[in-house]
Amino acid sequence: MIQSNRWNSRSFSALVVVLLGAMIVLAGCGSDGPELPESYLKKIPKDVAVVRLKNEAGEVSAEVSGAWLINWVASYELNFMRQGIPVSPSMEYELLLQGQQLLRATMVVALEAERLGLTVDDEKVQESIAAEMALFESTEVWRKQLEDSGLTPDKRRKQLRWELLRDTYRDEILAPVVREKRANESEARRYYEKFPDVFEEEATVHVFHFLRSIAKDAPEDQRERERRTAVEARERILAGESFADVARELSTDTSALKGGDIGVVMESLQFDPELKSVIFGLAEGELSEVIESPQGYHLFKATEVKPRRKRSFEEAKEEIMQRLFDQAIKLEMTRVAAELVMQAQPESLDLAQIIGPPPTPPGGTEGAAPGAPAPAADAAPAE
Image (tube, rainbow, N blue to C red):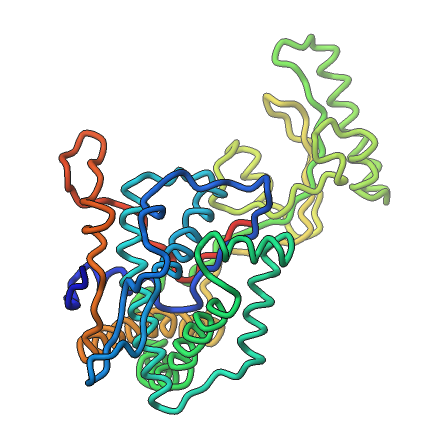
């Protein structure tokens, strides 16, 4: 049955995390890709509206199909599965509820964009179709996925046009106001002064490493031979040979394959205090003495040294303003969508009448609130 919309706290919190940015589309999967288990998705009628809006004459003027909702939920499920995250019944149940709310919000924002005269040209829709197809092994695989969800290419184009209209509304109507009021230089400076620790940069050293390994129970004469080899390696480097060449020839560390390059070492990294003290005591370009540790005899060379420092406001300003903007535009999109839903009063299909009550969580009671992870607006499908 169709119920009148009730805008509640769950709707609001779900929209906070999802409305900014384009909705995730299904990541490409071939015959060897993950398959969705028998699930609640099988119960959703593909050709029935899960959200619909009527005009004054009582006629349906816009709707979100069950097929679109199925495609939306399947997107997240495939993404989770590719990351090795099992999709539980509770997760899928919650995704269906969230998806219905979010597609409803997409619909009303897109319609408001049209009312304001905003448009999306065919070329932009086709670019989005092409980008979506590129995630799949072939056009045929993309078409097959649409067919399995109950969609056609033409229906998907209409959905993408709504999604693009939503984004156009965000970018052309809301973004300028948000940047002016919430993401300006004054707000950025206030943030910089309130959270000074965020802009502290720890010391780093780009290090090359040489090692002659020794066993803990190695006899003294063997230990001396390995130490002597390390000393000779150091003398060759000081005489002008490259650290990389000597490391490839004599080092027993796995980094020898890369000429001893172990990359950038951060001050926060936890390892042998004595070795750490040596590394962070080197000047740029300096070669260490031979250092003994339980692992053997080491040489270190620092090729780039960056001391601990605090970034200036000018250095951080653009990053802060972008961070403030990203946070504020999500909240503003949520607020606007909530207002538009309240004004339009779209009707939502009572999914519980079709798929039943929430599943019983392990150790819980029937009907307990499920706890699916909230989808992220900028999450990308797994490659």
